[in-house]
Image 1: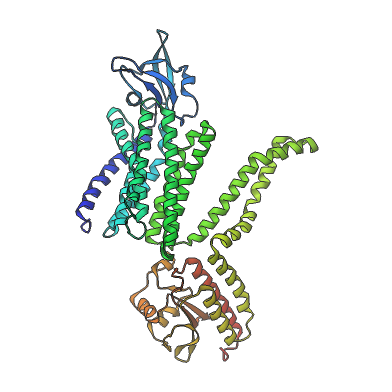
Image 2 (image 1 turned 120 degrees about the horizontal axis):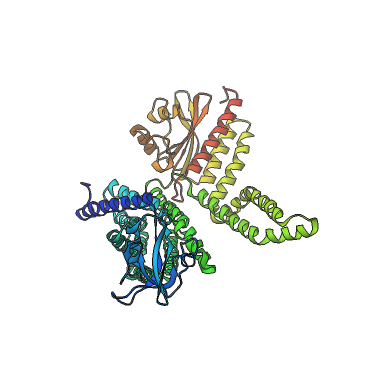
Amino acid sequence: MSRLAPLDRVLVLILVPLWVVCFGLAVRTQIRGGGLPFVGLSVENSESYPVLTGEFSANYPSDPLAEAGLRAGDRLVRVGEADLLGVGTLGLIARALDESGRLRVPVLFERAGEQSETSLTLLPLSVFRPGLPASLAFAASALFLILRGRPTPTVRAYFYFAMCWAFWTCAFLGGWYEALAALATIATAACLLFPLALHFLFRFPDDRAPEGRWHRIWPWFFAVPLGLSVLLQLTGWVRIGEMGFIVTFALGAVAMLAVATSKYRRADRVARRQMKWVLFGIYCAALPPTVGVVLSVLDPRFQGLFLPTLWALPLLPLSLLISVLRFNLIDIDRILSATASYNILAVVLGGGALIVVPRIAEALSGVAGVDPGIGQVVLSLLLAAAVVPAHRRLRPQIDRVFFKERYVLDQGIAELLPTLSACTDTQELTERAGAGLHRLLQPEACVVYAGVEQSYAPVFVEGRAVPPAFAAGSPLIVSLQDRRTPLALSDAGRRPDEAPLGPFDRAALETLGAEVVVPVRQGDALAAFVCLGPKRSGDVYTPTDLSHLAAVAETVSQRLQRFDQDEV
């Protein structure tokens, strides 16, 4: 906290404790259970009873008005023991919450001058439960990043954006005053959702401000429809307000993807890897709500799918944290290609299950006399069993089109390993290994050092000048003596289970000008090592690259075991 600027310190001390209170109330709400009567009411003035508009939340599993024998035009007089004179939708919610934690509440209504009693089914408060993990993830990531060091404009923008989303997904409902506080919090956060999210994306990952005034203005256009949607839900137009919010949310997600994609196309290689994590997080968080919106437009019965899709939101702050802290923790290219492959197959599988399978089952029932239901089950299982083999064939094609460099490297390493296993002497083995790695990874320098008496001297060189030899007792050689995996200079290049480099290891690698050093062993002894400089493309060495290098080193090591010791 002492390293924060005064304004940042004030915001942290205000927003974080306030969120802790809201989150605690939201957890209490879920533990206590119950529900709320989210039905549309219109009230003329404070001296009249509210009239049902016929609207109700799409998150209800069924029509609560029909179940209670209510319809549009009925006047609600009392809910439980609370009188509803002059009360609107928000007042009805607050009074029902005050009454009990049950899922049905007694209601007195008036129709054609006659009063009758019924019980109204409440919308379970558990529908807001998916927002709690997202709220916790956003708040924790925001606090972690801003306390991790002196906040940059990008980190500060993320803190605003993440805390806003943390408040929005934190639904606490427990009475009149609590409902008012929840309404004010959620409505304010809803208006700020996408303006703050887009403001962060404009700055990520290089701390540059948006180009031009227009980039600072247009994201705020999302605040108006989002705020209006919340207002409509509380003034009787529940279904229209919900649909407006869902559609605006989907458009905001598309805008975030568009901005992130535009930034990605202008970024360098390292920034692109960070942006890929952001794109992956937005994609994972935005795809389920977008699918829910499409289904809602096609069939209003699917409007209740929106809130359950909030379970995917924690993937967004998780991806953002990885992009900032350890963007090379996992090879994001492989994750993206696998995700794309499985999504394409899921669409094909879903379409086949809904369209093709029933028709084939009907045809089989007419020809072979098989029951159509049994035929559909068997055909669906066969279709699902084809997913994994199809993924193995589809994913390389996706890599070839969208991740060409990754595909070329994978194919090149697959061809290099058998070539190394077929070498007949150490000179051929050295030259093919060095030339192959230089061609596939395209480093600024590729040098193979081999043990010669009490030192290690270069026996293959491609690229810039290198030191002539390393003594057997030098810090680098000592570091490599017990290693069987590549040694990466960059923190991002090492696996999470590896310890950080010591000062001697780092100094040795920096002196050599190498980004990665790959030890090659002959039994328990260090026979040679390969030094690779930074890539000419500016990209980093990914975990996949290091796995390929380890495979090459293992193949060379196995081949050395078969050569005569004097020849080696």
